[in-house]
Image 1 (tube, helix red, strand yellow):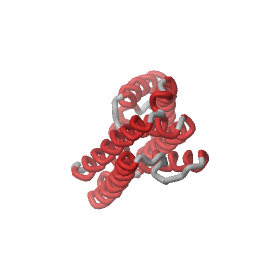
Image 2 (cartoon, rainbow, N blue to C red; image 1 turned 90 degrees about the horizontal axis):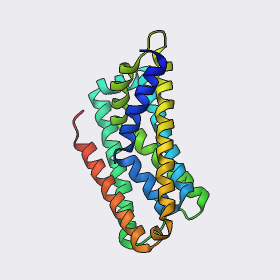
Image 3 (tube, rainbow, N blue to C red; image 1 turned 120 degrees about the vertical axis):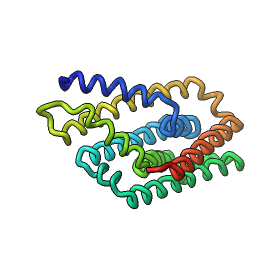
Image 4 (cartoon, rainbow, N blue to C red; image 1 turned 180 degrees about the vertical axis):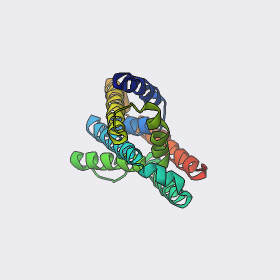
Length: 210
């Protein structure tokens, strides 16, 4: 397999995985609907930064070591699950009370974007399933003559490019219906849906087997 063929094949796979409804899409949609495109792009950047860290770790073998250590994997899994449940509960409380703030409770746009980035980054960084994903996939796309670490970085760049392109589409779609999304009842419903999804993902991560 040539380098170009490997990157194109991975891009197709990454796109299929990215457009599948999941936690990352839910977070981007929530921030776009509740706080605007700035916070949504910040959350997208945080998500992609988390992906890059895991891809680099997998390329260097760190993720493989983590996967081999049941204690470390379980600890990270529980920490990630607790964080997701925490965010989910905060959003559910916001849905019930009708609060408008981000999980960090900030009202200034710059701080909101910083909180959105941190949320996207932390959710991915504390999810060992992301590391397992790269550990399983990167070896399948190795190209003779290309160092594993370099290939891992290239695949991460492709994944990030695909993710950001998709997130741009999502945020643009939210912009089309922004007037409808500004309704308090819709915003509270969005917090309720995404909060429930976060709690569900956290519970599934906590109960999942290594």
